[in-house]
Image (cartoon, rainbow, N blue to C red):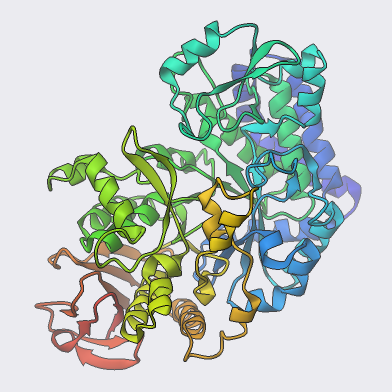
Length: 614
């Protein structure tokens, strides 16, 4: 297409959003037309800079707007350094990634961050440079090109809430530049910060207490919600929004297909509130969605909203005014591990019933583990009817999943333990939390079989849910906890490194050997992917319901579409149980590829059944 033709495409896309975009922008920023005109010009420059190859992908995805909901998509989350050392190392491992059945690759933060003050890459000092030890921006583009040739979607974190104290804006602010100081929250004394502290919760009360830090160079207080070296950005300043959106679009033009909006609920601050999920956050996300639909409509926005379910769903926006394309299903993840520890699926059933009631176009990323800890943000009002108090119940969950509870095979560690509040979060790989580690250490073959069976069943549950299943790198080969982090002074204080160990490539070589835990889990995951891909019952458009009338330790999920009716049953008890008591229909068990009547089908302890009605 000629430049004139391309400009006409831009003009048409912009025209579709112009009225709403201008109205929202001017309402948020007090009719600052100079800032708005700058924003529009920035969108056009980003459009001009978009490579032709990415524009072709945009057109393909525009023709199939639900492409990311297809049942053949499997994701993988990884740290570049831990997985393959560098971005070019990841390129060299793309055959392995494809062998895993993965076509959605999420790279953890890799932009330039100061060593020792990066929070795992979440303190960005330059949004347009890759961390030198990982490669260059050109390497990122080359990896994106290779991924696109293989049909792999590339996802990258975009840290919105803050910058590193080493970012150019922060450096200029410390040097006394007023314009740069206005990009953050600076105060001459502690009066206003102390007012904020009355209503704003602390993210890390034990390791990084408070929401503000003292800046000695300026003799001022600066807002630092997460860590003292992460300065919160002031999105009430339109130039912050303009320039951060520009940075986001720059990454999109480098080939990033999915932008993960990190800590998005925190990005708007207002005195007298908890500074979480404020209405203007949704205005900002909606404008970012429109910016992408104008410049790079093949790009998806993934919201990281680690909040209660009623706070998560609004980030989808509405059908007419959408915000994020996808959100993390964090509550289901926590509820799954709660169910493992209690052998009681009532909370999980309650939570899933809420998810299943949502519109089908709402797309969640489903996962068992990720780079972060497991927080116990459960529905304690629901649990209270069974006599479960929040503090003692959290203690039980943590005791069980760290192996302190008698008979527990799990091996995790606490994170951010606060004995004063009786609260803590949990770390560990999927395999170690399922008991693979303790079974290998004890040499107990029966325990190992049970642990692997549970590991596979949990993956089957993840693949049963509508949305995008995402593996945490290493889980596909049952990687264990990395205890060596205790010996590294740069990591020892952060127990999340327990599950952030380097990829065990020697273990990966065993993935074809089903006499090993690595091979058993890897081959099971591949088979689950294949069955999900082959059966329309797993389509995102399927009607999904809970199966009623099952015992508390059994979870049943029914999926119906296009003449297929699949019932997935998961047994969290310590003993085998009838899959569908009282049902007389005949089913084909997809997992063992056998046909039988429901009344003769049992689910082993810690196991599952995928039953397709005949």
